[in-house]
Image (cartoon, rainbow, N blue to C red; front, top):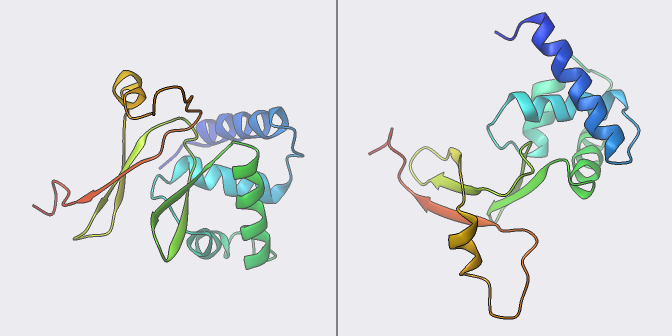
Length: 142
């Protein structure tokens, strides 16, 4: 369980990041961004809505959808399009890869080596964001 002090520190960091991205730190933006920072499960907007519904009964699905898209457009979170039928979100906006287990469905982050990924970029082009998605079987499901 996260201590109250740690949660307060996280909330202050979230408010600073939201403000630094040029957005107003509304209750919705703070709650959703904090959820994504504390829960590394790469949820869909509907999963976020379900997780926060009890604590924030005034949040609608539309509120959650609009908020995650605003946070993503501001560069605070990332879209994870590893599945054709669902858009997921990641609180880690830094470049990294995603591995989706075909057995359990979990999505894991893994670091990217910038020197190796730059080899994938065509000559004369300049990459600003690198998205790497790999599917297979995770260690737990082997």
